[in-house]
Length: 492
Image (cartoon, rainbow, N blue to C red; front, top):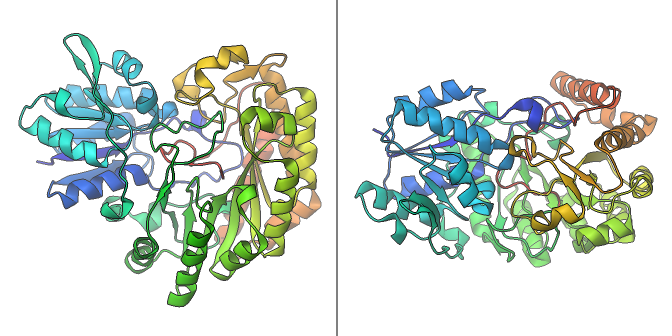
Protein backbone atom coordinates (compact mmCIF):
# COMPACT_ATOMS: atom_id res chain seq x y z
CA UNK A 1 0.00 0.00 0.00
CA UNK A 2 1.28 3.46 -0.93
CA UNK A 3 1.10 6.15 1.73
CA UNK A 4 0.56 8.97 -0.75
CA UNK A 5 0.27 9.41 -4.51
CA UNK A 6 0.89 12.88 -5.92
CA UNK A 7 -1.11 13.63 -9.05
CA UNK A 8 -0.96 16.19 -11.82
CA UNK A 9 -4.47 15.84 -13.28
CA UNK A 10 -5.49 15.85 -16.94
CA UNK A 11 -6.04 19.23 -18.56
CA UNK A 12 -8.52 20.08 -21.28
CA UNK A 13 -6.19 20.89 -24.15
CA UNK A 14 -8.48 23.34 -25.94
CA UNK A 15 -8.87 25.44 -22.79
CA UNK A 16 -5.20 25.55 -21.84
CA UNK A 17 -2.91 25.71 -24.83
CA UNK A 18 -1.91 28.83 -26.67
CA UNK A 19 -1.58 29.51 -30.38
CA UNK A 20 2.11 29.03 -31.07
CA UNK A 21 3.45 26.33 -28.77
CA UNK A 22 4.45 22.90 -29.99
CA UNK A 23 2.03 20.08 -29.19
CA UNK A 24 4.81 18.21 -27.42
CA UNK A 25 5.41 21.04 -24.94
CA UNK A 26 5.25 19.29 -21.54
CA UNK A 27 7.27 20.40 -18.54
CA UNK A 28 7.74 18.44 -15.29
CA UNK A 29 5.45 19.29 -12.33
CA UNK A 30 8.21 20.42 -10.01
CA UNK A 31 5.82 21.27 -7.17
CA UNK A 32 4.66 17.71 -6.64
CA UNK A 33 8.17 16.42 -7.38
CA UNK A 34 9.40 18.48 -4.41
CA UNK A 35 6.60 17.23 -2.17
CA UNK A 36 7.33 13.65 -3.19
CA UNK A 37 11.02 14.08 -2.38
CA UNK A 38 10.20 15.44 1.09
CA UNK A 39 7.85 12.55 1.84
CA UNK A 40 10.33 9.98 0.59
CA UNK A 41 13.09 11.48 2.70
CA UNK A 42 10.78 11.13 5.72
CA UNK A 43 10.47 7.40 5.03
CA UNK A 44 7.06 7.36 3.39
CA UNK A 45 6.16 5.30 0.34
CA UNK A 46 5.43 7.71 -2.50
CA UNK A 47 4.37 7.63 -6.15
CA UNK A 48 3.69 10.28 -8.80
CA UNK A 49 1.10 10.10 -11.57
CA UNK A 50 1.46 12.87 -14.18
CA UNK A 51 -1.67 12.47 -16.29
CA UNK A 52 -0.61 15.21 -18.73
CA UNK A 53 2.78 13.72 -19.53
CA UNK A 54 1.28 10.25 -19.97
CA UNK A 55 -1.83 11.57 -21.74
CA UNK A 56 -4.23 9.87 -19.33
CA UNK A 57 -7.94 10.59 -19.15
CA UNK A 58 -9.64 11.32 -15.83
CA UNK A 59 -10.89 7.74 -15.66
CA UNK A 60 -7.48 6.27 -16.52
CA UNK A 61 -5.84 8.50 -13.93
CA UNK A 62 -8.30 7.40 -11.24
CA UNK A 63 -7.75 3.74 -12.06
CA UNK A 64 -3.95 4.18 -12.00
CA UNK A 65 -4.10 5.86 -8.60
CA UNK A 66 -6.64 3.45 -7.11
CA UNK A 67 -4.48 0.49 -8.12
CA UNK A 68 -1.76 1.82 -5.80
CA UNK A 69 -4.22 1.68 -2.87
CA UNK A 70 -3.01 4.96 -1.36
CA UNK A 71 -3.89 6.19 2.10
CA UNK A 72 -3.82 9.72 0.65
CA UNK A 73 -3.91 11.30 -2.79
CA UNK A 74 -2.41 14.76 -3.33
CA UNK A 75 -3.66 16.64 -6.39
CA UNK A 76 -1.96 19.80 -7.65
CA UNK A 77 -4.04 22.28 -9.63
CA UNK A 78 -3.94 25.85 -10.88
CA UNK A 79 -7.20 27.67 -11.56
CA UNK A 80 -7.65 26.28 -15.06
CA UNK A 81 -7.25 22.72 -13.74
CA UNK A 82 -9.27 22.90 -10.52
CA UNK A 83 -12.51 21.61 -12.07
CA UNK A 84 -10.76 18.52 -13.37
CA UNK A 85 -9.10 18.13 -9.98
CA UNK A 86 -12.56 18.15 -8.40
CA UNK A 87 -13.83 15.56 -10.88
CA UNK A 88 -10.81 13.39 -10.26
CA UNK A 89 -11.37 13.65 -6.52
CA UNK A 90 -14.90 12.35 -7.03
CA UNK A 91 -13.70 9.38 -9.08
CA UNK A 92 -11.08 8.54 -6.45
CA UNK A 93 -13.68 8.65 -3.69
CA UNK A 94 -15.90 6.28 -5.66
CA UNK A 95 -13.04 3.82 -6.12
CA UNK A 96 -11.49 4.18 -2.66
CA UNK A 97 -13.78 5.98 -0.19
CA UNK A 98 -11.21 5.82 2.62
CA UNK A 99 -8.44 7.54 0.65
CA UNK A 100 -7.93 11.09 1.92
CA UNK A 101 -8.04 13.48 -1.05
CA UNK A 102 -5.78 16.52 -0.63
CA UNK A 103 -5.56 19.41 -3.10
CA UNK A 104 -2.86 22.07 -3.24
CA UNK A 105 -1.64 24.77 -5.58
CA UNK A 106 -2.21 28.46 -6.24
CA UNK A 107 -5.94 28.26 -6.82
CA UNK A 108 -6.93 26.56 -3.58
CA UNK A 109 -4.43 28.76 -1.74
CA UNK A 110 -6.28 31.81 -3.04
CA UNK A 111 -9.87 30.62 -2.47
CA UNK A 112 -9.83 27.54 -0.18
CA UNK A 113 -13.33 27.98 1.23
CA UNK A 114 -15.02 28.42 -2.13
CA UNK A 115 -13.10 25.48 -3.62
CA UNK A 116 -13.99 23.07 -0.80
CA UNK A 117 -17.61 24.20 -0.89
CA UNK A 118 -17.90 23.45 -4.61
CA UNK A 119 -16.04 20.13 -4.65
CA UNK A 120 -17.32 17.86 -1.92
CA UNK A 121 -14.92 15.01 -2.67
CA UNK A 122 -11.90 17.10 -1.64
CA UNK A 123 -11.13 16.46 2.03
CA UNK A 124 -8.30 18.91 2.72
CA UNK A 125 -6.78 21.93 1.00
CA UNK A 126 -3.11 22.74 1.56
CA UNK A 127 -2.62 26.50 1.62
CA UNK A 128 0.72 27.94 0.53
CA UNK A 129 3.97 25.97 0.45
CA UNK A 130 3.30 22.33 1.12
CA UNK A 131 6.57 20.64 2.05
CA UNK A 132 6.29 21.03 5.83
CA UNK A 133 2.50 20.93 5.85
CA UNK A 134 2.18 17.63 3.99
CA UNK A 135 4.31 15.73 6.52
CA UNK A 136 2.34 17.13 9.45
CA UNK A 137 -0.94 16.42 7.66
CA UNK A 138 -0.08 12.82 6.75
CA UNK A 139 1.03 12.05 10.29
CA UNK A 140 -2.16 13.58 11.71
CA UNK A 141 -4.37 11.67 9.26
CA UNK A 142 -2.49 8.45 9.96
CA UNK A 143 -3.19 8.54 13.69
CA UNK A 144 -6.72 9.93 13.31
CA UNK A 145 -5.68 13.20 14.96
CA UNK A 146 -7.33 16.61 15.07
CA UNK A 147 -6.87 18.43 11.74
CA UNK A 148 -7.25 21.79 13.43
CA UNK A 149 -3.77 21.30 14.91
CA UNK A 150 -2.19 21.24 11.42
CA UNK A 151 -1.11 24.71 10.28
CA UNK A 152 -1.59 25.80 6.68
CA UNK A 153 -4.69 23.81 5.70
CA UNK A 154 -8.45 24.17 5.22
CA UNK A 155 -10.90 21.34 5.77
CA UNK A 156 -14.60 20.68 5.99
CA UNK A 157 -15.85 20.34 9.55
CA UNK A 158 -19.20 20.19 11.29
CA UNK A 159 -19.55 23.96 11.16
CA UNK A 160 -18.43 24.34 7.55
CA UNK A 161 -14.98 25.01 6.13
CA UNK A 162 -12.28 25.68 8.70
CA UNK A 163 -8.92 27.30 7.86
CA UNK A 164 -6.04 26.86 10.29
CA UNK A 165 -3.35 29.49 10.96
CA UNK A 166 -0.83 29.91 8.13
CA UNK A 167 2.44 28.03 8.16
CA UNK A 168 5.65 30.07 7.87
CA UNK A 169 7.54 29.88 4.59
CA UNK A 170 10.51 27.54 4.29
CA UNK A 171 13.40 29.92 4.92
CA UNK A 172 16.24 27.55 4.08
CA UNK A 173 15.37 26.09 0.69
CA UNK A 174 18.57 24.02 0.82
CA UNK A 175 16.96 22.05 3.66
CA UNK A 176 14.60 20.53 1.10
CA UNK A 177 15.79 17.53 -0.91
CA UNK A 178 16.27 17.77 -4.65
CA UNK A 179 12.90 17.29 -6.40
CA UNK A 180 12.16 13.64 -7.15
CA UNK A 181 12.76 13.80 -10.90
CA UNK A 182 13.25 10.04 -10.81
CA UNK A 183 9.65 9.44 -9.73
CA UNK A 184 8.34 11.24 -12.80
CA UNK A 185 7.57 9.09 -15.85
CA UNK A 186 10.68 9.05 -18.07
CA UNK A 187 12.00 12.60 -17.64
CA UNK A 188 14.14 12.68 -20.79
CA UNK A 189 11.53 11.18 -23.12
CA UNK A 190 8.11 12.44 -22.04
CA UNK A 191 9.01 16.01 -21.04
CA UNK A 192 10.20 18.74 -23.37
CA UNK A 193 9.63 22.47 -23.84
CA UNK A 194 8.13 23.92 -27.01
CA UNK A 195 10.27 24.02 -30.15
CA UNK A 196 11.47 27.59 -29.61
CA UNK A 197 12.15 27.13 -25.89
CA UNK A 198 15.06 24.72 -25.98
CA UNK A 199 18.41 24.64 -27.71
CA UNK A 200 19.15 20.94 -27.35
CA UNK A 201 17.37 17.78 -26.23
CA UNK A 202 16.80 16.28 -23.74
CA UNK A 203 15.63 19.47 -22.04
CA UNK A 204 13.87 20.04 -18.72
CA UNK A 205 13.24 22.74 -16.11
CA UNK A 206 14.43 23.51 -12.59
CA UNK A 207 13.49 26.07 -9.93
CA UNK A 208 16.20 27.87 -7.96
CA UNK A 209 14.18 30.40 -5.95
CA UNK A 210 10.75 31.23 -4.54
CA UNK A 211 8.91 34.46 -3.87
CA UNK A 212 8.79 37.75 -5.77
CA UNK A 213 8.94 41.35 -4.48
CA UNK A 214 7.16 42.68 -7.57
CA UNK A 215 3.85 44.55 -7.29
CA UNK A 216 2.21 43.49 -10.58
CA UNK A 217 -1.57 43.53 -10.20
CA UNK A 218 -2.03 40.27 -12.14
CA UNK A 219 0.33 38.06 -10.09
CA UNK A 220 -0.84 35.93 -7.18
CA UNK A 221 1.95 35.85 -4.61
CA UNK A 222 0.09 33.99 -1.87
CA UNK A 223 1.75 30.63 -2.49
CA UNK A 224 5.39 31.74 -2.25
CA UNK A 225 5.16 35.26 -0.84
CA UNK A 226 6.66 38.61 -1.87
CA UNK A 227 10.15 38.04 -0.54
CA UNK A 228 12.75 36.21 -2.60
CA UNK A 229 14.28 33.07 -1.09
CA UNK A 230 16.79 31.11 -3.10
CA UNK A 231 18.84 27.95 -3.14
CA UNK A 232 22.58 28.30 -2.62
CA UNK A 233 24.99 27.89 -5.52
CA UNK A 234 26.29 24.49 -4.24
CA UNK A 235 22.71 23.15 -4.01
CA UNK A 236 21.84 24.46 -7.47
CA UNK A 237 24.96 22.90 -8.96
CA UNK A 238 24.04 19.54 -7.40
CA UNK A 239 20.68 19.71 -9.19
CA UNK A 240 22.29 20.61 -12.53
CA UNK A 241 24.90 17.87 -12.25
CA UNK A 242 22.27 15.29 -11.29
CA UNK A 243 20.13 16.22 -14.27
CA UNK A 244 23.15 15.78 -16.53
CA UNK A 245 24.50 12.56 -15.02
CA UNK A 246 21.26 10.73 -14.15
CA UNK A 247 19.01 11.77 -17.03
CA UNK A 248 21.32 12.96 -19.79
CA UNK A 249 19.81 16.45 -19.76
CA UNK A 250 21.57 18.90 -22.09
CA UNK A 251 19.36 21.97 -21.79
CA UNK A 252 17.58 23.54 -18.80
CA UNK A 253 14.85 26.16 -18.46
CA UNK A 254 14.87 28.22 -15.24
CA UNK A 255 11.40 29.79 -14.89
CA UNK A 256 12.08 31.54 -11.57
CA UNK A 257 10.20 34.81 -11.19
CA UNK A 258 13.32 36.47 -9.78
CA UNK A 259 16.33 34.62 -11.18
CA UNK A 260 18.36 37.79 -11.89
CA UNK A 261 17.26 39.85 -8.89
CA UNK A 262 20.58 39.12 -7.11
CA UNK A 263 23.29 40.04 -9.60
CA UNK A 264 26.14 38.57 -7.55
CA UNK A 265 24.27 35.28 -7.24
CA UNK A 266 23.78 35.01 -11.01
CA UNK A 267 27.46 35.79 -11.61
CA UNK A 268 28.41 33.05 -9.13
CA UNK A 269 26.06 30.62 -10.87
CA UNK A 270 27.64 31.40 -14.23
CA UNK A 271 31.14 31.16 -12.81
CA UNK A 272 30.47 27.70 -11.36
CA UNK A 273 29.12 26.36 -14.65
CA UNK A 274 32.27 27.55 -16.43
CA UNK A 275 34.62 26.37 -13.66
CA UNK A 276 33.10 22.88 -13.61
CA UNK A 277 33.09 22.64 -17.39
CA UNK A 278 29.42 21.63 -17.49
CA UNK A 279 28.10 20.93 -20.97
CA UNK A 280 24.67 22.51 -20.52
CA UNK A 281 22.72 25.18 -22.35
CA UNK A 282 20.07 27.09 -20.43
CA UNK A 283 17.48 29.84 -20.53
CA UNK A 284 15.82 31.94 -17.85
CA UNK A 285 13.33 34.69 -17.12
CA UNK A 286 14.34 38.22 -16.18
CA UNK A 287 13.09 41.74 -15.59
CA UNK A 288 14.32 44.27 -18.14
CA UNK A 289 15.44 46.66 -15.39
CA UNK A 290 17.67 44.07 -13.70
CA UNK A 291 20.08 43.17 -16.51
CA UNK A 292 23.19 44.91 -17.78
CA UNK A 293 25.78 44.19 -20.50
CA UNK A 294 28.37 42.64 -18.16
CA UNK A 295 25.80 40.32 -16.55
CA UNK A 296 24.41 39.21 -19.91
CA UNK A 297 27.90 38.51 -21.30
CA UNK A 298 28.68 36.37 -18.26
CA UNK A 299 25.43 34.48 -18.76
CA UNK A 300 26.26 33.88 -22.41
CA UNK A 301 29.71 32.51 -21.54
CA UNK A 302 28.04 30.07 -19.13
CA UNK A 303 25.69 28.67 -21.77
CA UNK A 304 22.64 30.94 -21.54
CA UNK A 305 21.07 31.13 -24.99
CA UNK A 306 17.69 32.79 -24.33
CA UNK A 307 16.18 35.22 -21.82
CA UNK A 308 12.40 35.59 -21.46
CA UNK A 309 11.21 39.07 -20.51
CA UNK A 310 7.78 40.00 -19.14
CA UNK A 311 7.20 43.11 -21.24
CA UNK A 312 3.38 43.00 -21.19
CA UNK A 313 2.72 46.22 -23.12
CA UNK A 314 4.32 48.88 -25.26
CA UNK A 315 2.10 51.50 -23.67
CA UNK A 316 3.53 53.40 -20.72
CA UNK A 317 -0.01 54.03 -19.49
CA UNK A 318 -0.81 50.30 -19.36
CA UNK A 319 2.52 49.47 -17.71
CA UNK A 320 1.72 51.95 -14.96
CA UNK A 321 -1.73 50.42 -14.49
CA UNK A 322 -0.16 46.96 -14.23
CA UNK A 323 2.42 48.28 -11.73
CA UNK A 324 5.21 46.62 -13.67
CA UNK A 325 7.81 49.12 -12.53
CA UNK A 326 9.42 49.29 -15.98
CA UNK A 327 9.30 51.64 -18.95
CA UNK A 328 9.34 51.00 -22.71
CA UNK A 329 12.75 52.70 -22.89
CA UNK A 330 14.20 50.28 -20.32
CA UNK A 331 12.81 47.38 -22.31
CA UNK A 332 14.32 48.50 -25.60
CA UNK A 333 17.70 49.00 -23.92
CA UNK A 334 17.65 45.56 -22.23
CA UNK A 335 16.67 43.83 -25.48
CA UNK A 336 19.50 45.56 -27.32
CA UNK A 337 21.98 44.52 -24.64
CA UNK A 338 20.68 40.96 -24.80
CA UNK A 339 21.15 40.73 -28.55
CA UNK A 340 24.61 42.34 -28.32
CA UNK A 341 25.61 39.67 -25.79
CA UNK A 342 24.67 36.93 -28.28
CA UNK A 343 21.58 35.81 -26.35
CA UNK A 344 18.13 35.47 -27.90
CA UNK A 345 15.31 37.49 -26.36
CA UNK A 346 11.72 36.36 -25.97
CA UNK A 347 9.03 38.86 -25.07
CA UNK A 348 5.82 38.09 -23.17
CA UNK A 349 2.96 40.50 -23.91
CA UNK A 350 -0.66 40.76 -22.75
CA UNK A 351 -3.72 42.20 -24.43
CA UNK A 352 -6.88 43.30 -22.62
CA UNK A 353 -5.43 44.81 -19.46
CA UNK A 354 -7.53 47.26 -17.41
CA UNK A 355 -7.64 50.52 -19.32
CA UNK A 356 -6.72 48.88 -22.63
CA UNK A 357 -7.94 50.66 -25.75
CA UNK A 358 -7.46 50.15 -29.50
CA UNK A 359 -4.79 52.86 -29.32
CA UNK A 360 -2.77 51.20 -26.52
CA UNK A 361 -2.96 47.91 -28.44
CA UNK A 362 -1.57 49.67 -31.53
CA UNK A 363 1.25 51.01 -29.36
CA UNK A 364 2.05 47.48 -28.18
CA UNK A 365 2.07 45.98 -31.67
CA UNK A 366 4.29 48.79 -33.00
CA UNK A 367 6.62 48.39 -30.02
CA UNK A 368 6.99 44.63 -30.57
CA UNK A 369 7.85 45.18 -34.23
CA UNK A 370 10.67 47.62 -33.50
CA UNK A 371 12.08 45.82 -30.43
CA UNK A 372 15.10 43.50 -30.73
CA UNK A 373 13.03 40.37 -30.11
CA UNK A 374 13.66 36.87 -31.42
CA UNK A 375 10.39 35.39 -30.12
CA UNK A 376 7.08 37.03 -29.35
CA UNK A 377 4.22 35.70 -27.24
CA UNK A 378 0.90 37.44 -26.71
CA UNK A 379 -1.78 36.28 -24.30
CA UNK A 380 -4.85 37.78 -22.63
CA UNK A 381 -4.89 39.63 -19.31
CA UNK A 382 -6.40 37.22 -16.78
CA UNK A 383 -7.31 38.31 -13.21
CA UNK A 384 -6.69 35.04 -11.38
CA UNK A 385 -8.12 34.47 -7.89
CA UNK A 386 -5.60 35.73 -5.36
CA UNK A 387 -4.12 38.44 -7.57
CA UNK A 388 -4.28 42.05 -6.27
CA UNK A 389 -6.71 43.06 -9.01
CA UNK A 390 -9.09 40.13 -8.53
CA UNK A 391 -11.37 41.62 -5.86
CA UNK A 392 -11.75 44.92 -7.70
CA UNK A 393 -11.88 43.65 -11.28
CA UNK A 394 -15.52 44.72 -11.78
CA UNK A 395 -14.32 48.34 -11.70
CA UNK A 396 -12.23 47.73 -14.80
CA UNK A 397 -14.42 45.57 -17.00
CA UNK A 398 -16.39 42.34 -17.21
CA UNK A 399 -14.98 39.01 -15.95
CA UNK A 400 -16.48 35.71 -17.05
CA UNK A 401 -15.36 33.71 -14.03
CA UNK A 402 -15.39 30.16 -15.37
CA UNK A 403 -12.44 28.55 -13.66
CA UNK A 404 -11.96 25.92 -16.38
CA UNK A 405 -11.51 28.66 -18.96
CA UNK A 406 -9.24 30.90 -16.90
CA UNK A 407 -5.98 30.37 -18.66
CA UNK A 408 -4.08 33.22 -20.26
CA UNK A 409 -5.21 31.93 -23.67
CA UNK A 410 -8.89 32.81 -23.30
CA UNK A 411 -10.22 36.41 -23.11
CA UNK A 412 -12.28 35.84 -19.97
CA UNK A 413 -11.84 39.51 -19.00
CA UNK A 414 -12.95 42.34 -21.28
CA UNK A 415 -12.00 45.90 -20.23
CA UNK A 416 -14.59 48.66 -20.41
CA UNK A 417 -14.98 50.07 -23.90
CA UNK A 418 -13.83 46.92 -25.72
CA UNK A 419 -15.34 43.61 -26.83
CA UNK A 420 -14.09 40.03 -26.72
CA UNK A 421 -13.98 39.98 -30.52
CA UNK A 422 -11.74 43.05 -30.57
CA UNK A 423 -9.30 41.39 -28.17
CA UNK A 424 -9.12 38.18 -30.20
CA UNK A 425 -8.67 40.11 -33.44
CA UNK A 426 -5.93 42.19 -31.81
CA UNK A 427 -4.02 39.10 -30.66
CA UNK A 428 -4.15 37.67 -34.17
CA UNK A 429 -3.05 41.00 -35.65
CA UNK A 430 -0.15 41.14 -33.21
CA UNK A 431 1.03 37.65 -34.17
CA UNK A 432 0.70 38.39 -37.88
CA UNK A 433 2.60 41.63 -37.48
CA UNK A 434 5.53 39.96 -35.74
CA UNK A 435 5.81 36.51 -37.31
CA UNK A 436 4.87 37.17 -40.94
CA UNK A 437 8.04 39.13 -41.59
CA UNK A 438 10.87 37.72 -43.70
CA UNK A 439 13.49 38.44 -41.02
CA UNK A 440 11.48 36.59 -38.35
CA UNK A 441 10.88 33.58 -40.59
CA UNK A 442 14.57 33.50 -41.56
CA UNK A 443 15.60 33.72 -37.90
CA UNK A 444 13.53 30.64 -37.07
CA UNK A 445 14.82 28.71 -40.07
CA UNK A 446 18.45 29.37 -39.07
CA UNK A 447 17.74 27.76 -35.66
CA UNK A 448 16.89 24.40 -37.22
CA UNK A 449 19.66 21.86 -36.68
CA UNK A 450 17.91 18.49 -37.17
CA UNK A 451 14.95 16.95 -38.99
CA UNK A 452 13.20 16.81 -35.62
CA UNK A 453 13.77 20.54 -35.23
CA UNK A 454 12.31 21.14 -38.68
CA UNK A 455 9.25 19.10 -37.72
CA UNK A 456 8.77 21.02 -34.48
CA UNK A 457 9.10 24.45 -36.10
CA UNK A 458 6.77 23.44 -38.94
CA UNK A 459 4.15 22.18 -36.51
CA UNK A 460 4.34 25.34 -34.43
CA UNK A 461 4.14 27.47 -37.55
CA UNK A 462 1.03 25.67 -38.76
CA UNK A 463 -0.64 26.16 -35.39
CA UNK A 464 0.11 29.88 -35.50
CA UNK A 465 -1.23 30.16 -39.04
CA UNK A 466 -4.39 28.27 -38.10
CA UNK A 467 -5.04 30.67 -35.24
CA UNK A 468 -4.18 34.02 -36.79
CA UNK A 469 -6.14 33.40 -40.00
CA UNK A 470 -9.16 31.83 -38.29
CA UNK A 471 -12.49 33.60 -38.47
CA UNK A 472 -13.41 35.98 -35.66
CA UNK A 473 -14.57 34.47 -32.38
CA UNK A 474 -13.23 32.31 -29.59
CA UNK A 475 -9.99 32.49 -27.70
CA UNK A 476 -6.52 31.33 -28.47
CA UNK A 477 -6.33 27.73 -29.63
CA UNK A 478 -3.51 25.28 -30.02
CA UNK A 479 -1.06 23.69 -27.61
CA UNK A 480 0.67 25.39 -24.75
CA UNK A 481 1.85 23.63 -21.65
CA UNK A 482 3.73 25.97 -19.35
CA UNK A 483 1.15 28.31 -17.96
CA UNK A 484 -0.97 25.79 -16.00
CA UNK A 485 1.93 24.54 -13.92
CA UNK A 486 1.66 25.80 -10.34
CA UNK A 487 4.96 27.65 -10.52
CA UNK A 488 5.38 29.34 -13.83
CA UNK A 489 6.37 32.93 -14.21
CA UNK A 490 6.21 35.45 -17.03
CA UNK A 491 9.75 36.75 -17.20
CA UNK A 492 9.21 38.98 -14.21
